[in-house]
Length: 121
Image 1 (tube, rainbow, N blue to C red):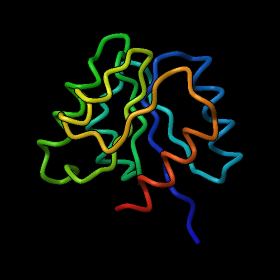
Image 2 (cartoon, rainbow, N blue to C red):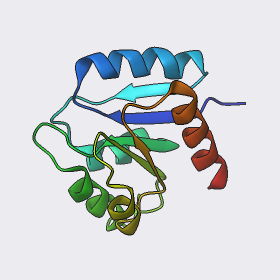
Image 3 (tube, rainbow, N blue to C red):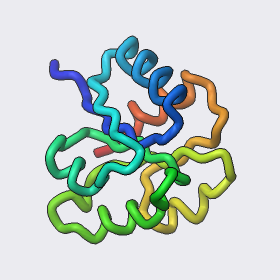
């Protein structure tokens, strides 16, 4: 069975390094984006099974990115989990996120959210 691919949009380099290790240990393929990457274009190129999107990126707003993806016909169905240190779950779900994890989260919480989101599609 093919590994599920996670597209990671996170601007904290330490968090990216830790998530890459964790997700690879859990048998995911991981594509980590640069902090200022075009997430929509990357989603089109990478065709991930799920996008793990930080709500507050250095130069981008996660809700704006979420809205762009939901408005793009070719990738509008991409499962997206938002992560944030602020409890913005309801707002993220209203914008079309499939899930939300509040930082700091336990690794098991993230893995469960990713697997459930991928499985639900």
